[in-house]
Image (cartoon, rainbow, N blue to C red; front, side):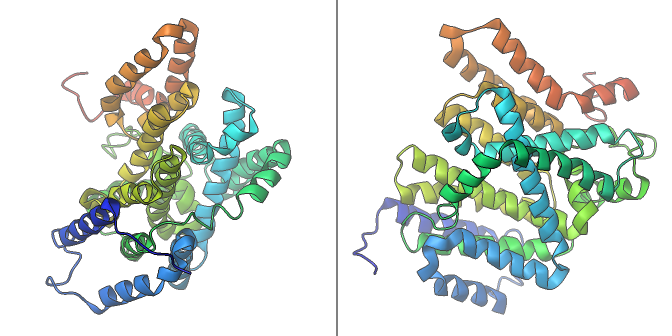
Length: 401
């Protein structure tokens, strides 16, 4: 039964924000001849019909995306992404326990950071494997499944308890304004539909899908800049694309971006709620984040920037809102470097925060450990580029190096 409802500033802001973002889609030609098409009416009507299920918005989004992808591309893209996420979380669980904590409650609160750590490990592992002619779907399945199985054995009791505690809270969300999930449905449905369209962008076809395809054909990455000018750049995102492509083809790679957006939304929403921020406002901010024109443009064409944004978001949320797990953050900063060299832009801000928060208890040993973790997860592509070309960022910034 719906109680009396009072519209507040969060609701007004959400209406204005979503309206602006949808209007800006005209700029990106999401509308044919600036006219609303039948598919748009369907999305709006379905989103309104789903209002009674506003506390199940995560289930609605996942179910809608899964049905569409399975209907067009089969179940392989879904299974490959599910395999990647499960492996990432369980592998990340091992790393988190090894880094600093075995406290059950604290580990439960690090669900998405654990996934990010696992993604970092998988990406770095594939980067190392790329030098050898061993890269096949069978090898990846055996290797990563073995580590995942080991994590299940080591953390069986924790995993069982975690499922028992979280099985409802993950899917059945807290009570919020009944209209806010409608905006999420509209945006997410558009994102899913755009992801169903085969890739046509120059960047996507020449790099983000070309590398996984060549990698699958050869079983090794040659790092030959005379054949491919970008051969030695950081490929942290593309290594994960390769993992997905090995098991689910190009559609699996396209499905990865909507999954990342949904993870970003849930992570920021849950993080803000934990800080006792109004639930409606906590819902609104992630909505505005995933509906910005830049985000929609990155979804329209395949990029690694969505993945990089996820890692950057986790880094700063953990730094600014929660207990500073500096070893975890250092691993993620290294992973961000493994994805894009532009990560250097966030380093000054992170260093200032680190100094401010640790100056009273600053230890050179802790600083060196954190630095080593950044180097471990992020240095390999730059070292490779330097040894092959003499420039750690080839073919960019050659005027510096």
